[in-house]
Length: 268
Image (cartoon, rainbow, N blue to C red; front, side, top):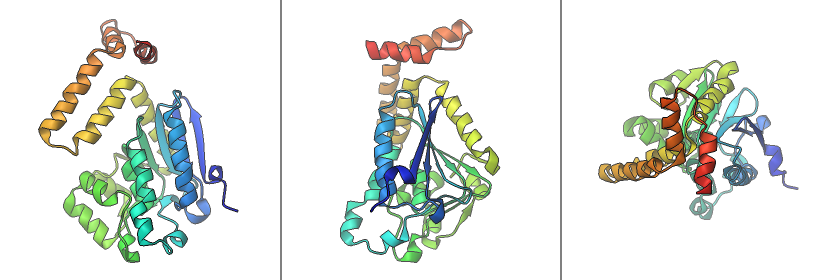
């Protein structure tokens, strides 16, 4: 009998934040087909949940975020599986998720775990976190977005060296190269991720969604196209109740009610 997807992934929703935890600590939270199935279902459910504004991904236990793909499954994959690219497709859904995503990296982030973190908008790490793409040591290569996203974050030369050597990058080195935005003690990691989520949630939700979209898609196009995307997104925001509420609240020296403004935009 195959494991229940709910056993390998836990979801806790509170105060606008969904904490999604890969729950296979006995194998350092390795990603297998069941985890990918659960991730796909969870992303669909959370995208439709208006109470969820930010997602935080982490791993169960104190050893690993996600220590790569399940090698037992990897050993029997065929060229057809490579073309199907299930993990790559799921991580595309993570990257394209309409709400902000944060990876709280609490240990080993190897292979598919590293690539999951790369697919998130923001990465924070504990001091015991380590990042690696060791696939070439198995006679394969990173193929869940790692070759593309890592280079965009840390530069072509450094990404190539990390991928070809498979070396481990410690948390402080990841911070220095821009792979993560913050490094904290393990006991502070989730609080730090939640603080970041709360800072995001204090802003206009439509502005956040459009800013994420423009940053993501603008990075992959030429400058003029990116500038056009920025201009068009701003024109949408200029017509929103959210902009009216934000500017009025600033002038009136009060906290904005962006949730109420968002409802007005929905009812237009």
